[in-house]
Length: 329
Image 1: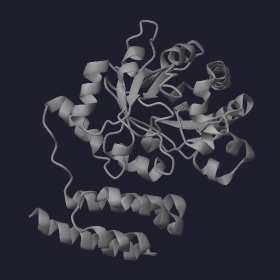
Image 2: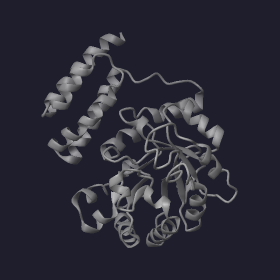
Image 3: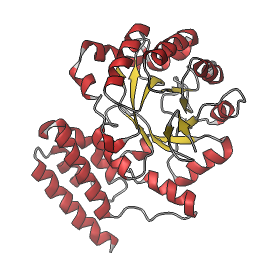
């Protein structure tokens, strides 16, 4: 049984990665329904929380149906992160997560995210302040290092464990790689098999099939895997991995009715949480993923991403259902 303090996650948990503009409550809802064991909010700016910025505060929303769930914070100021952690704790998550992995310039240029991989001393100080500021377990998500010449994740893992983190998720790329090239799990395995390390280690990067998830467990011994991009538009991946692990066989892929119904449920939740207009607009980034690989989908996609009304979107989705049902039969 994998535990983060008193949070029981099963013997090989599947985590939904925190993804900016993706891992909101509507998306987390469909992933939870399809087998995700632990999920995180989109990353939240510590400075934004302290300023009471509306967008940052809205991201604090967590719901009982999605537990266990963690609120992820990022920032480069030790004092701001300490205060933001207290604010996040008051929102009622099961844990607090710190982002030391985001590679994008607007985050790194502020001394946050993966930038802290260049200053382990500051990373350790900042982490210790957060750990001491809250009663909840604190976890971290990070990368192998800043670039190929500074892959310092083994030292990072030991230092962060020493200051009290309860689990560590490692993305198998450096900051310099961004999301390019293949993820390298070799160092993730070294961290997991370091006799000094006793906290759960979760691997992240390129897990896009049941076979890949179980290969990472068998080869590197990770306690669980974190899935990001492969879940976008395809929340079924979590239960597919669980079924394959238990039975050694593949679940049939979702049929058109399942895809349309899940897409509609996602849209409905998006509108309830964000309001009709924003909910419809922000759902547009998901349609291509729900129907990825479908032949001749371009015209449907154009109509889905331009329809301004709920009724209009539903009409197109029903046409999609009818069109591709014929293909399946």
